[in-house]
Length: 222
Image (tube, rainbow, N blue to C red):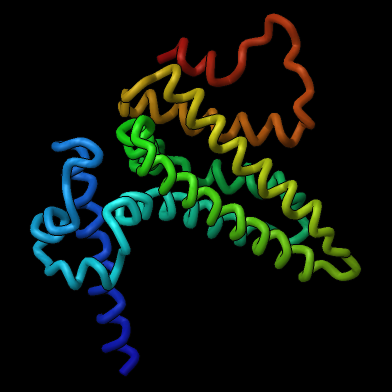
């Protein structure tokens, strides 16, 4: 029975991936707003009904790529030592995504959808969902620490700040690199994500005059 359930879960995961791959293929070829659920289903080789078993709309199918990246980062966060400062855990979780290609789907989706209001809203909803997940993960961390008090304001301020730093890194990357998805450009994005968390951890103290950021140095080397 367990083997059957495992196979069923694998089949579900494969179908879900086929849908998101089809949605991204159509987004690349036709642009945002120019394809339907039926187009995605046909491209993925499934029925329209099957599509709706997994996603509520074309926007939800595309936003699942952002969910996937953020969920991976959260998994890394939960594996960090319980006594580690939360911000250090968040930064380490991003550093664990060592391969720049890990951020490729997130970067490509951002570059293809940033001017489309409907898709941008779906992206924001994905980040908002991650905010709640960060709050839950941080609450779990506090609950596992003897004598630690859970401060709801702290948790929500922390989660909101982390997400804002992530969004800021995406905006700066796109302004610098545009739709460039080369390994060098993706390395810049990854470093921007890490640097944004570093600024948060340092209390946003002003950079010393004349000091180049790590991302600036990285871009010069590239």
